[in-house]
Length: 247
Image (cartoon, rainbow, N blue to C red; front, side, top):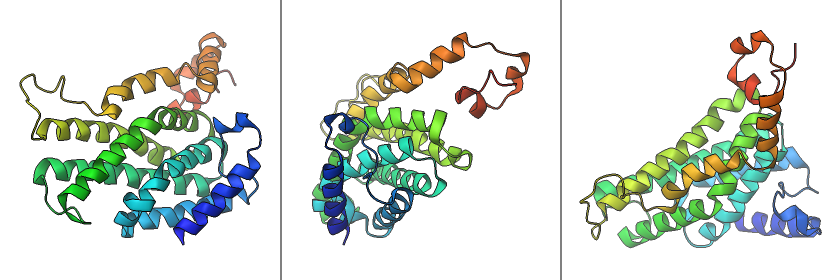
């Protein structure tokens, strides 16, 4: 069922993105009933991740994960409705926690049964998730920051912050897993242990995101906009949305 829905949505996405410019920020398939479809789709994907994790993290399910993460980025950047953004953030949060849990299991139990078919499968799954977040990380970080400063409904700021925290937790878990791997010599402690691509890149992605289009413009307008004195007591969310010059 999930595979058929993915294939159908992918076909619609390809048909609707005739212009090559849509690839960098393609939202969830645009010719569908936007918010409701996105909310229903990610609710379904989230249930797979919670109740049938191995179906989505291995085999054909794992092959679909890059597309799913791309669609998460499209939803949280292009939609302002609560339901689709909440469903996309919930899916992403559970995906990050599943990846961190696999890294923690590998650290503590080595080859101990993490579901599925033995330790080799668990190690392959963790390696696949590391590669996924290493590859999709720059866009994911940028999308989360854009969502937090622009499109995120106020009630979802906490889940959004949880996803950013999940990336940090996963980066730390990756470092611990590398440190505990059999072939790793841990002479110089924590400084050079974090060889996961996510851990190496996360700080640069966070820093670089503020130099990319929407966020760079926001920073520039904030720096040079007139700031009344009451800006000092405004909530952080209001500041981050560039509303400091009002009132």
